[in-house]
Image (tube, rainbow, N blue to C red):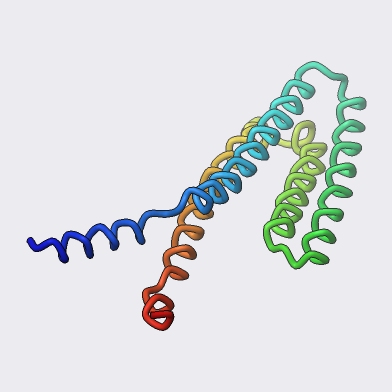
Length: 160
């Protein structure tokens, strides 16, 4: 191989390499999703403990209060995402709304349904964790594709 071919090959490898700043931005988004997933798992873990250790009436009241509080948070996130035209915040609002709905649904599920249904709902933290892992993978792939699609030789050729 000639020296020119080696130089071209090195330039191509450099262009394909994602810059540190872009990588850090991607990792920040994934980190936020991971933190949210951990908080949700802890939240549902406490709800499952509450079901085992708290009186029925008190637990139902707690679930209603938690559901309403999370619903208020989801409305705030939805409004903030809409006003700032930020789909990420808006999506977090929808996710928070779903968590609020699951929490409210637990008032009925834990005490008025079969053991199988109760187990399915008590494992909701697992479903949400899987969702956030898949979301993190999706965010990574989407951001890398977005970077690579913006990286074009056309701009370099025009500037020269």
